[in-house]
Length: 71
Picture (cartoon, one colour):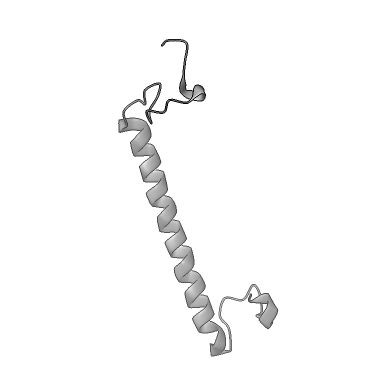
């Protein structure tokens, strides 16, 4: 959206104060996305190292794709 409103690119500090709010919102969004990725990675590592093994039919389904030859 910044491109549509002629926002200058690759500039660290902008002369106009009109871009300040947009940059703040974009920065907050980036921080939230980064924190969400950290939570995901923590959950992944924790589940792989401390999670219990799933059985042959973890959801208790009775359809053909969950049946196996072990009975």
